[in-house]
Length: 335
Image (cartoon, rainbow, N blue to C red; front, side, top):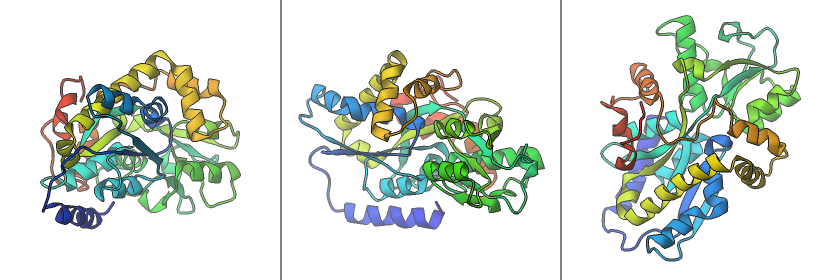
């Protein structure tokens, strides 16, 4: 999201709120997420009503929740900054952008990492074996140019391939599409889209088509696993709703434990809410894949932030990863 747009959204939200304070904690608590397994905890929290359960335990009474799935990080950023939702599951680079742009006002911070998972760049054209093989005729679908996980990973890989200062040479080929729409375009093979930087389970669904192949993984950008998505909340909301925040934090930990102990049931929940026709065994296999982790500790966050800062996408360089996260996460073994 452009910096000017973020600033306008912040201003629109701040001005009406200067004259008063919230007397009671939020009800309902409103959540939004992108689509895919990278946000599995939100699906589990929704289905098992874990936030409602923890709210009752903390004495908040009959708190309700609202859940929505949004196709792009830009729409999630809009929703959080305008106060349309209270917490979002969002890709790491979009969160980092919000953290940088909202310092001193809304102060968007992360509650915890949601997961690490590889995002694959897939291609339909057989000649595309690496990012060197793209031509001006190719188009690469991804959730949002410049700010999505996939967009930043593509820039990091481009810099490693073409050299410092050439991180953005492929940006002109990128096209904003939601994961389902991009997958449909790749499977049909009738649009100008020749490649798709996507996420699970969509990338694996594509690879079942013999006309589509894997080019690279997002893990190539950081020479190892990296955090894919986080839970992001404004400090204003946390300060106004301390017990609600604790209920969400506890529900998130409970969701992590449930996924670890009951991957098949977690797959059922995901399939039911997402209304996917993917086989349950296929979804469960992804959940337990060693390349995946739903642990709350951030991984390679500072490496990604450092890249975005160095190329001018972010202004302020934090001293440590804990500067990006609320205190409850500070004891985690992250980087």
